[in-house]
Length: 321
Image (cartoon, rainbow, N blue to C red; front, side, top):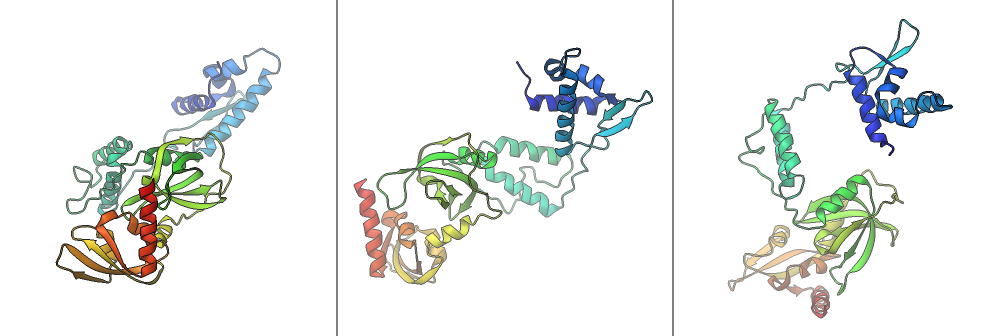
């Protein structure tokens, strides 16, 4: 069985890093199993095949950042070596603020599979003398961003690896979910929820999806992206427009006491009605009806009448499902 290219590159890098003297191509060919298997010495055409393979591998390692020195030997042969002192990363130095930021970032993954990796990284930094608290955080500030949705991890991995995904998605005003084929770009936490931004292949447009509305499993596909990934993805801007950030007026709503904290944070005026309810005045804009539906029986729209009717229609659509 042919040895994978990644293993061949790894073996070549280890040979170049581990040797105390430059090694010729012949010595490397005899030391690395993949070269012995792919181009046995003595068979016709194998020398040319090995030379092409070796030159490609050497270029790939250099592109990955390995510094390979070329040394002319006394016997006329060219030798190759990757000296450890030339390939050693500089010492990592962090000030208190930078270390605190890393500790807080690590806390984000406490409920995802990356929790172990983040914890291990913090332990290594602490052992190296970085100014981290024992738990990797600050005593007066700690971030906790939950990642309970089952779709979070497969989408995170798909976005990292640039793999398209397929999932069933139920919009706020829809009774039944629809299948979506998406090229995932980025995940962002906003207004208490995780959102995915990506390219919707069926609609041929950028779209943002709330993870809690994804039903069933997220299935990845081994296919290339068809649309370029933008340098900046505006997840937060899109979500804020759904929530009425681009205001066109003011809405009056009743919110049950002790509920609707995101709405209260946006309220320009808050009145205690004295019956277990508060009256809020919030900016009204496109998408506000979909956002208010999410609070269920804890929110009642007073005005405008159009917004109240839209919320009632959405609730009826959900009830029919």
